[in-house]
Structures are given as C-alpha cells and as structure tokens.
Amino acid sequence: MRYFRIEEDRAAGYTGYVDGSHRWMLPGIICPTCKATWSALAKDYPSVDLTPVASLANFEKARPEPADEYERLCELVRPLLPPGAVLVPGAGFGPIVGRAQGRFGQLVSPVPWVLLMQREALEKLQAEGLQGLKGCRTELRFRQRASPELLEMELLPVGRAHPDCLPSKRQPVCHRCGRDGLSLPDKLLLDATTLPSHLDLFRLEDFSTEVICTERFVDACRRLGLDGVVFHPLPAR
Image 1 (tube, one colour):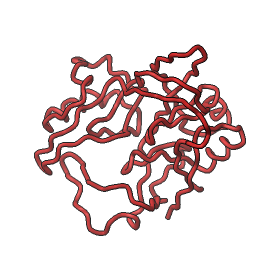
Image 2 (cartoon, helix red, strand yellow):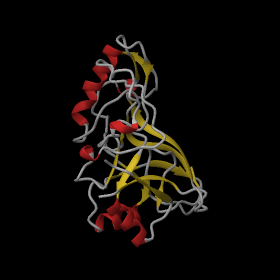
Image 3 (cartoon, one colour):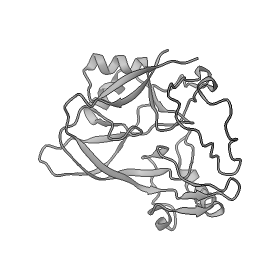
C-alpha cells in the first residue's frame, strides 16, 4: 500500500476562505518536569460534544494551566472521546465555528492539519467503500447566497515517522506531559509497521499536522473528479 500527504491545491483557482476554530479546547500545559509551557496543533475531535461536562467555561479560552489542572480537565473529557483519540494540550472539540466565503473545491484544506469536504464528495467516497471517513458538521457563516455544506473530517492520530528520518540525538520524551520537541523532518519517511490497515484517511500520531491518505483514497478522488487538494507520495519502510 502506498501513502500520500494531502495539501491544498493552490493552483486550482478556488477563492474559498475559512476563519474559525473549534468550539471547545483543552488548555496548554505548564509542565513541572520538563519546565516547558506548550500546546499542540491538530489533535482535534469535531464529533465530541462537551455540553455534558460541568464548567464548560474551562474549555472556552486558550491559556496554559499547571499540569495538575490540565490533567483534571483531561479526565472530564476522556469518557466522551472516540476510540483511538489521543489527548494533548490544546486539543480541540466540537464543530469549527467561524466564517467562510468564496468558491471551494470538493475537498478543502484551509490549514495543513484540517480537511473539510463538501457533503456530496464525502458521500461519493463513502460509497466507494473507503474506511474511516467520518464527516462532522461545521458552524461556518457564509456571506453569500450559494454556500456549500462543508463537513470537517475527524482524523484519528495513527502511524508514526520512521526513526531513520529523525535526528539520532534528541531530547527524551517528557514522562509527565509527553513533549518530545521534534520538528517535522525535511524528508518524511513513514514507519510501515505503525500504519493502519483499517483507515484510508488519518493523521500521524507524532507529527499530527500531517494528513495522510492511502492510495485507495487517491484513486477514488481522481476517478470521481474530486478536486481542491493535491496528493504527494510519501515513502514508507
């Protein structure tokens, strides 16, 4: 099986613009062990509804919190997560709320770690038998008459980079907060032993800004004429 990175097709001529964020989020963390204050991008779960959680105000503002408070908030959220979800500081929940305008392709990547689809495109791909395609509603306000229904894909973190593309000398992962401090390698190599057989669309666990799909996904998009993104092959070992 071959794998591909998904990116916005800037040459397609679409003018679509999305400005929004998820309704709720975990705070960042102030770690007493590694002394870092940080939050991460991309590990977001748009299907998760936090309204059953008490004190929703704790999840409405981006900010750092001491490790004990961050961990307490994680435990309030954890029972609501889909199988395979991983919590990190800054993780987002619920629909993207904001505004959008312009012309969009069938697939939309407003930032590298988010993938949206028009409903018709998602239904066509699901009819092809592709696995792991879960579209979640968005709350985007359009200032135009003909506005598409954009759904956010919930991308589970699965798969990792191969050690051969990572620095041989690097700081150890913090056992308290999980921070590893790695930067995305210039030439990403996937670890084939960690890649899922049950998903055609996912994000990497260790570099979660990278949206990855299988050759089956690429072939279906090309056969159906679904546009808006480009696919870059990634080696795996």
